[in-house]
Amino acid sequence: METICLSVSSWFSDFFKAFGDAFIDEIKIGDIGEEINEGILQWKKSFQLGSIKLMLTDAIIVTWIAVIIASLIFGLMARKASVRPNGKQNVLEAIVGLIISVAMGFGMNKKEAEHVAPMIGTIGIMIMSCNVISAFKISPPAKNIAFPVALALFAIVYVIYSIIRFVGVKGFWISLTTPMPALLPFKILDYIIKPVSLALRLFGNVFGAFVFMEFLYIVIPFVVPGLFGLWFDIADGILQAVVFSYLTMSYIGEAVEVGHEYQEHPEEFKSKKKEKKSKKDEGTAVAA
Image (tube, rainbow, N blue to C red; front, side, top):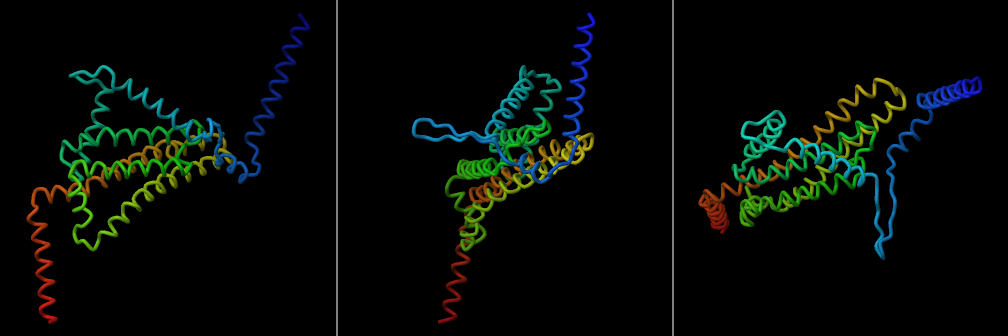
């Protein structure tokens, strides 16, 4: 019996000694730059599939984890929809209604707004889940520049597709040449700048918040990081998802609105062209 008691006491002694050493290592401030650098660097692994080399990174893994979790949560919330909605159904209907109303505010009609709502909602939920996962000390995918760039390229392709679907190729062309054809190169350039802006905004905010939180965890590992994490990990992550979705809708709406104006009043656009042509002819006659 005495041998068992001694072994138990020695186990607890070794445990508390190891715990104390680990605790000191956790709160001890070492090379801050090196520790932050280790947090920033992404994990990656190459796989050979025949003659094709595939790269797997932590951003890909975390994205799939976040998307699966978000799909399960929102899938459970959307189950068993009823005529008399409950709390979960009210939340989802409020979100969908908000997206539709905002889209209509940008110049889309109700049918168009209802068409873009699922995709805009999906983009927003994906970004939100990928950002908020950093609250669990998991690196957010957006700290890898490839993630926001790919997302921004997808968004701008969807914007152009939606515009052409709603107002046709002619309406899209009108949006590029309104208010004057001379602006065409700048309008085309705008569709290059928009995805760059979307990508850099998302990357800059998430990367900056990640570095700041890593610094707090190193310098002040208790209480304070949790308080700041309420904003930088959760609130800011949700805000960036809202901003990305909002801007995507605005890009669709600003072109669709011009296309609708052309479809409803084509004579106004033709009269503007005639006025410009007549003024040009008058100027030529005066010069002659």
